[in-house]
Length: 119
Image (tube, rainbow, N blue to C red):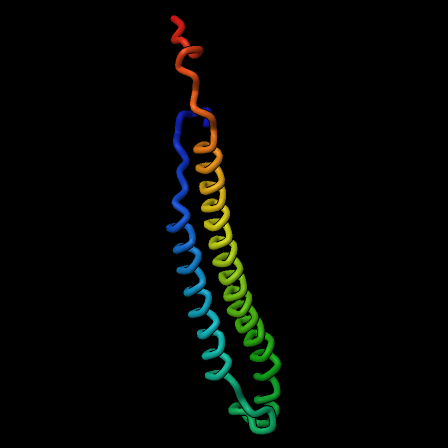
């Protein structure tokens, strides 16, 4: 890099980070399921009743409820995708390091007689 900083990738740590992100995605997905279970209701016998007040309440409640549920599910999917991409990135770094190490080790030894040190 132009500023002299060093970039180093430890593939095992990158993959572990992806696995940890996947665990967060699983927890988020379980939270979404728990939210759905905890807030579900029987439309035929809703907890707010079937009178005019209950009718008004449901018009305000259901759209907000659905948005929260969708948001949690979207977050879980995004976290799962980020975890998978991070693991794939770690695998790519691992493959690149493996290929480059073999490419370097397959280089011919320099001929010390023709490679003179020049001042």
